[in-house]
Length: 345
Image (tube, rainbow, N blue to C red):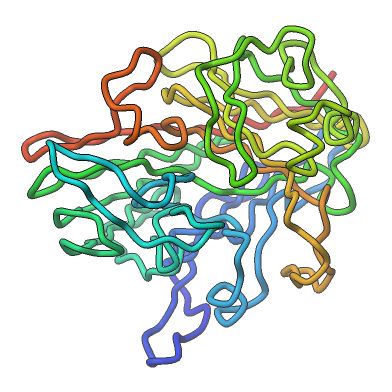
């Protein structure tokens, strides 16, 4: 079902799509940013709850800096100084995060109105055309986000094609809170990753993949989120929490994270076919952002689990352990993310 959510300053409408419904997942999706606006599930205690963070209106989405629920691109995560070499030529893209490019630049895909290419009661295909030179990236990129809801599962299939060689890395920046409000500190998080990428003070990877053994980044067994966020590890202290990419074990579509709340007896498994997962504990939620519910969002009010290529991959092209982000004409970029909700026994 397609309804009007609001209007942009230039008068263009932003639409909201409703996919699925009770007793299964009910997904409210916006054409602005292809963003998850609401995500209602039946919790393990039998109560229907909205487990995603969102902004209240169009103005807040345009003014916001937290990417609530959006599909981010052209390049999710960071590129050092917005500069990389592509086929022997230096490419400079827009920067706005401590001197780096973040999530595609200051006018990324999260701030664009995507076209509705197809829609039905349980699915929608949103399409965005990003012209050559957009935010400095080469090539006209045609991106698609196919959203599907089936019972307790939400599936996002991302794809893109280009007319000249470029780099692409798309992801969802959905924030989850399985209690439907309050802090996620008492949630437990498991991530099957044996290594992670330490970062400098601007979020750029410092070195090769580093084993998680004996560190705050060892989430191979469930850990309380609040304990992870306050771990004395220097990387956690410097970032004021987790805002790091982990190298997920295995390949293909697999479980990359599992988040549980004993309070509502709810679990979500995140599945992806991507090599990395950015684990972000909302470190920059500082009480200045008003949520859709009218509350001020603070660190710990939500967690973003973002499957993707590793940050700064364009500057590690050809290196072992850094799957390429290059997309050439005639090729199709593809990425799949799924969220599977269930009741805890």
